[in-house]
Length: 79
Image 1: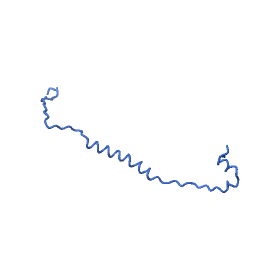
Image 2 (image 1 turned 180 degrees about the vertical axis):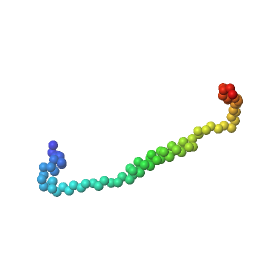
Image 3 (image 1 turned 45 degrees about the vertical axis):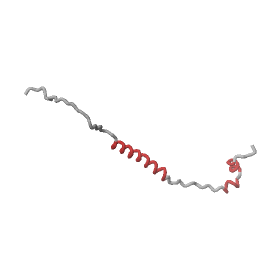
Image 4 (image 1 turned 45 degrees about the horizontal axis):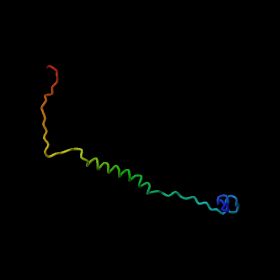
């Protein structure tokens, strides 16, 4: 245990305690994180809207044959 803990050494040395200049780090503005926080969900919404609008919600064919019967719809009230 030849290596001493530097924190313990600073606490025990009275002269070194006054010489330490503590600098508080200023909080940086994290524009990159803010840009990602808004741009990624916006990109997901835009891609989803594009896919929803351009997706095939209707089916069309060139040679479809539709056979339909006519049915009379009327009320069962004598009048």
